[in-house]
Image 1: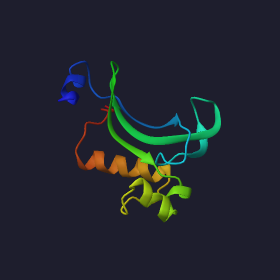
Image 2 (image 1 turned 90 degrees about the vertical axis):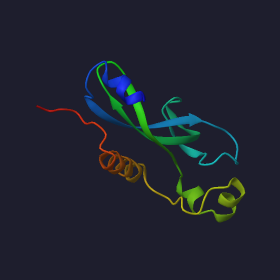
Image 3 (image 1 turned 180 degrees about the vertical axis):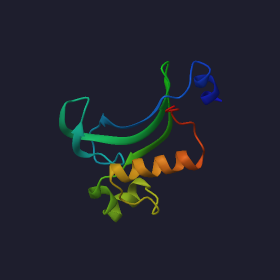
Image 4 (image 1 turned 45 degrees about the vertical axis):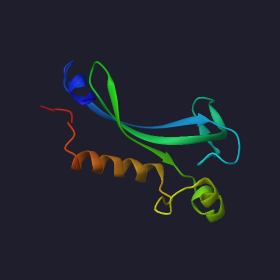
Length: 116
């Protein structure tokens, strides 16, 4: 329903892949680790998500969003179990997450930029 509304204001011009960090303290929030946080401009404890958005000249629409699970979380079975991280969620680099999102968007036939 949101995609047709976006396209009413013009065609999709690009796909945007982004990683977004959220400053976060504590040991129990899934994925919190010392990593680069753009909001803070430095490395600190935060969660990071990778997203894919479709964009026109008017607005953008996120169509895929996944929490990045750092290796320190991915390989800590006790911590994962305590936090309820499903076994099928494995470590992937941010690039691998982005590639999965792009493949899924192609498979779903989401609109792409018209180059000609």
